[in-house]
Every structure is written in structure tokens, then in C-alpha cells.
Length: 190
Image 1 (cartoon, rainbow, N blue to C red):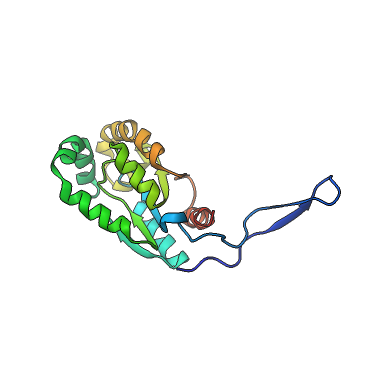
Image 2 (tube, rainbow, N blue to C red; image 1 turned 90 degrees about the vertical axis):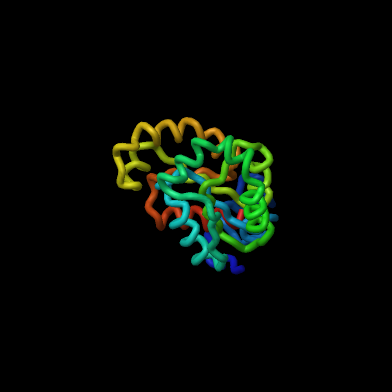
């Protein structure tokens, strides 16, 4: 796992004699991803989790991984029935636990039910969690299915509170992919 070496560093003299303060980015003082050593990307289908996780992995020398949950429209259906899946699926929880036990990864999480506080806590402990926040029209356009606009609006309303409770950082989708990757690289070293 590598850390970026060319980070911005600025020094400003303050009005108190003999005191200085340094602001901005400097050499990473802890492993990328914090104590858990991973970067985790959450959000609804169409938010770009996989694309950003791959970009972060390449830029920061991490391994790309993703959960084996359903994606796209199937993920929305699975999230709508998350309570039933939670009651039925220790196998999927075991797979998630195995994935989170490793470090040095950029993980795109798909089909993970964040309704249980234990799951949110495990994700936060496994590394830094990035929520790719969006609105239904952008998601529908990215998925190429504007007929699902109402369904996506309902999914945003239902799941955003859990995403916000899980995330260490929120990334709005109004930035370019390059700006988002820069944002992740900066926050990964905090």
C-alpha cells in the first residue's frame, strides 16, 4: 500500500511571536483507510461506487474489491426487501466479514443492508466510508432508465439516513470523476 508523496503543504505565521501553524495536506501519518486499512464506497445504484473505488485503488496502490450483492435494478429490489434478507442470510454476512477482515482495499459495497446498526459499525471500523450522495434524477439518468425515477426517489428517502449514519465522508456527485478521486485521495490520508 502506497501513500501519495506530493501533498499540498502551507505554512502561515500567526500574530503570536514564536508560534506557527501548518494547514493543508502533508505526508500521511497513518495508513490509508485509517486503522481498518480500507476505503469503502456506499451509495445507491448509479452513484458510481465501483468506478470511484477502482480509481482510488489505482491511485493509492490498493486492491479493488466489491461485495457480491446484486447491482443496478436488482440491488434496488434487494434493498426494498432488506428485512427479509437480513433474517435469511448469515452466508452473505460471513462473506462480508471475510472481505472486511482484509486491509489495503478499496471496496465498492453493493446490496449491503445498512439498516442494522451492527453492520454500520462494522463498516466504519473496517476503514473510511465514503457515501456517494445523489438525487433520483441523476441516478435514473446514469442507470439509463428514467421510468424508475419515482422508485429511485423513494430509495433515496429510505436509505439516505443509513448512508449518512455509516459514512465518514460524503461525496456529492456534482464533481468530475477526477475531482472525486482527488477528494478521496486527500481524505484517505486523514
